Length: 136
Image (cartoon, rainbow, N blue to C red; front, side):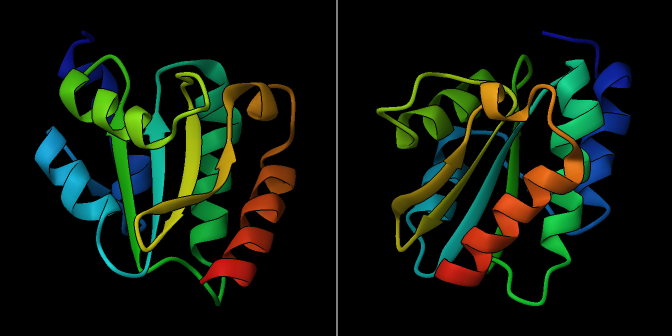
């Protein structure tokens, strides 16, 4: 676990644009299994989350077509919530950061860490926007 003062600004990067933080497994279940589309970001303290994932999520969330719900869990902080989110992302292995789009409780699109590292935020956002346009 990381000190809260360290992750607070990283959390805020997403919450200030409308993402809801999910802190336990029940909240994750409620969000993911809800009707409609849900975009889940597994946030992280790593450099690729700061430079690529969070900026991409912010850009994509401003698209005209976007998910009904924007939610986030934080790796290394709320273990129960992160584990539950990752369970919904199976068969993909645990990854942080990671981004997943669900429609009516089913995983329809995922971006794993290896697809985030070394790629510009706009390229990742474009991938997300394509998914949002298709499923939302």
